Image (cartoon, rainbow, N blue to C red; front, side, top):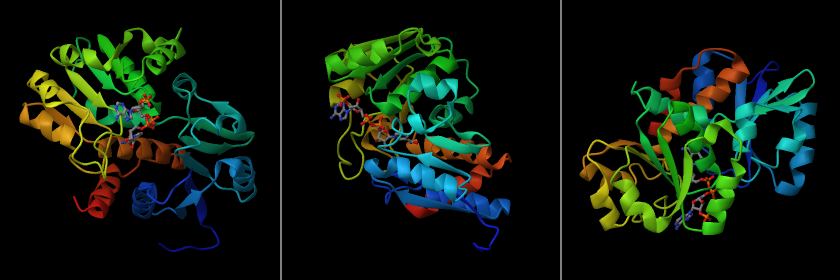
Length: 287
Ligand code: NAP
């Protein structure tokens, strides 16, 4: 990559940020697109977020991604957010406008990308979502956009799961949403067509863990889709279990690529080389 006096800046903020794969895929895509941009990681502690955002305005950063722990905290520093970001309650992509920073959440687009590629009619799909954290919110919005008949969110903490349900009150994204406790899982799985793991269970270094017990696994329907948001390891134990039951599997790399491609399209207003992004990540991860 050639840096010149005309090079424009993009980036990602998080704390920590060292693990982020976004610089790999964005810089590969920018190079392929022949654009004079560079995408950098910025380690921003929570107490310096406001100063960092002012600094980004001062140095004319074109836009940035946001990861943990700033996805909600960034909102007060933006002049507008999209409806989908407001519904999910978090922002992962920000771009510069004449009047300030605007934000959206491209995780829904990323989550949906590999599902929409299947060109299925989702209207009879029963979705089960494991976990009720930040990523689960994008998954609920995504399943709702697909038109799933039934969206069941399963969580381990009754108070948190109920608060999750309440937080969607009146939202058009949550018409078919219900929440359940973890012990309802075997019953739910025997009917589920789409099972999404949004918990960190099974992520490196806990690669021998799965959100499903061996009894749960027996309930999985042949032909159901098992989708893990985790991208390292690849595949996770959950996806290996699902494959052994005849399920179709989707790993978290596709969501990562999809949310990144949608962000890059916003910043550059150009078609994005998604395959280059995919290959750069697969090569980096040794897949
Ligand atoms: P988060 O906000 O911390 O939510 C994690 C959820 O998992 C919480 O509901 C938590 O339950 C639940 N959980 C954690 N450990 C559990 C356990 N042992 N048993 C049952 N439930 C458990 O995190 P997040 O931001 O949503 O991220 C979740 C995962 O998605 C991470 O692995 C992340 O890397 C991945 N992700 C991937 C992408 C992608 O592009 N592929 C995008 C976003 C996130 P409590 O609420 O009870 O604590």
